[in-house]
Length: 525
Image (tube, rainbow, N blue to C red; front, side, top):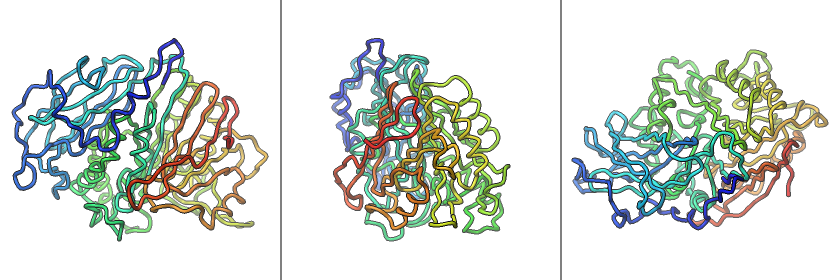
């Protein structure tokens, strides 16, 4: 991000420090001033071997003008069946440092956190005394072991004049079906932020797969399972590199718990008569593991089966991110009731919060960062129609209410995950009338790996484009969306891979769309 007060942006060469293979950085070669030894000088791994406890890497998130969250989780044996990463059943002190330079010669903050067994030895350090719009480097130490170095960046001052803000968004990373090569490319980008829109893990067991090491053999149901599944994903070096390179903001969708869950009910096609208390227990344990493994603030801590994940982050006067939760408060999916006026996907409290935000003072660009398809999407040719029951099409009245409020906001853009394909949509004042006004834009991200390599197009894509003229683009390759925002425009580059079933795919720009300030709707350029 660049403020137009004269402060220059970060030198791009310094953004090449942390790339794929972050977990293998030579931490021992770094200076250790200020990181004294601790009582945890020997942390045994499997078979009694001494191993680094930083096998899951480091991460940062939730940037504010004066602080960020720093995260790590200690695990000498990350795939241990009990979910505790091979760690001893005791508190382990973890020292941390923040510096202005990657050599840690200019240390600006340091301290000690306690990694507790009841939190799977995860650490969340919340910082509040940093400088706005500033790049920092951070690291941890447990015993005699140093973590890899992470890089993060604070948000600009509230109301600061920004010339540019760059971020990427991604979703849907199914470990057994593909390699996370997209993240090796993302880590080389010049970004201020990464937004992850859901399906960070998949709860199901492996069904065939591509021979990824330690592919899941069974479905996750309890806390130990969820902890181990998160650890398995975090061992991926490309994912570690992207976490270490930029601050992240995250929201969950369904697979962090169970496919297509809704509020306190299990997925509709599986055990429809299940006691909701059984699913609430599963949700409680999935939420705990999610918090333990994400760079979230204490305000997002899971309390039983509840987790306050919707929130707003502001970047100067340029961008507001309204991060939504479309799972925890929704009514159960029901095609017969999709038009009922009282149905909700947000819940009353979150809906009112969002409407107040959009109706008040906002930045130049307003992002709704959320999980499931927002625009109308009819899958059937001709006079008949059919819609997804897991998307906003199953909650039409509330979708229309949010759409109408967005029409009065400055430059609303919806960013979406879930469907394993890129779409670009004009959000219409009336989706059934192509001539009605365009009030916002929806950009849909493809998956990191889910559904495998991808295809040029599906047979149903032509029908979707014909039946939904507000849909301007569909891509079914894997990758992420890179976004560059200025006061005058938003540029979205749809970055795609040739394959994910083996590592090392090159990346290319599949398409570029531009949204002009004050003119909703994206143009292919």
